[in-house]
Structure formats: structure tokens, C-alpha cells
Length: 124
Image 1: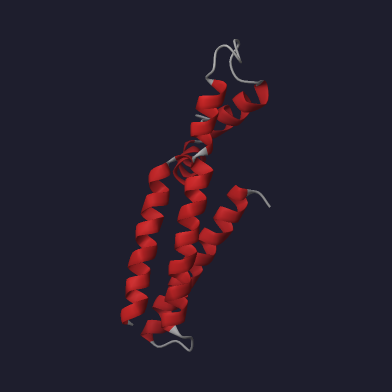
Image 2: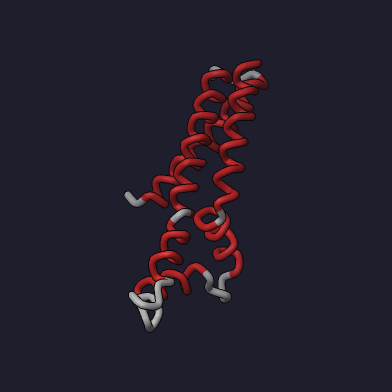
């Protein structure tokens, strides 16, 4: 399982746990505090994973921007990966992928969301 796949699975699990926790606040059969604490932990893990995933581009720019090492630009497989992400023919997919895998601010937002969910769980 790739790091990106693991990130998406953890993010989906945190969303499911948050929704189930909020629904159990209304009167569901499950324990709301446990679900909300689980959601907070999963969101925290998702934020760390997202920051790790998005950090690859810093590495790529640093590594492949070296003109002495790569005088003709990055290798073709790296170029194909970059073009796939910035495909102008698929703007919605490009926006989602950039939000999830490229923008480091997303990791920060997930971390803040995990703290907010943890506070909700503590006071439920």
C-alpha cells in the first residue's frame, strides 16, 4: 500500500468516525465520545501523512532542480508524474489531487480539525 493510499484510507476512516460520532450524539446506539476520540486520532494521523505526502515535491524540486546533476531536466518518469497531476483536461481531479497531496496547508488544517474534534469528544 502506498503512502498516498494509506493517507486516503485514514482520512476516509476519520470522516466516517466523525459522522458516526455526530449521529450518535443525536441518539444513536454507539458511544459518541469513543467515536469522536477515534476521529480525532485518525485526523491527527491523516495530517501527519498528508504533510509527508506533500513534502515529496520539496524533495523533487530540490533533487531534480540541480542543473549539474540533471542538465536536461528531470528524468522522464518524474516529468510524467508532474504532468499527470497538472493535467488541464481534468480540472476537478487536478484540484482534488493538489489539495490532498501537494498543498502542505491541508496537513495543518487536518491537524487543527483533529484538535477541535478531540475537544468536542472531551466535552460530550
